[in-house]
Length: 186
Image (cartoon, rainbow, N blue to C red):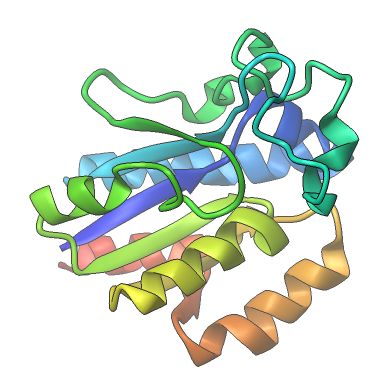
């Protein structure tokens, strides 16, 4: 069974895409809608820290810039999942502290309970949550599909490299339209 993971598609994170955000969110909303219509479970993951970011240690280079701000904290409404892909009642929402959707969450238990064999990865950013979750899922021996236009990154070159060169080593890579067409054929 396939499970669609919608990862870190939060207001503050989507804003980092600038003028590409609207197109990305519209496309992803269509993909999420198609998954729901086909009976594919959708699990939402978001990155959030406690107020004051006590989880961020002095050696955590990627997250140091958040210290002293309220960015992606539990009390900041900008850390909420973007309304374009808001969870429906009954769809799990997992909070993580750093990159991988598995780290510090019960994602593995939710996937096992649903009989998941294939993870369909979407999210922001390609060079953050997507690559980290892909590597973690590979270690756990899940089959994976990365939707090349279902993830994005503020660094467009990083995104392109990952979806064209790196991800095909460990996962199927296809567009959202190709994946949705495959759902209709099942």
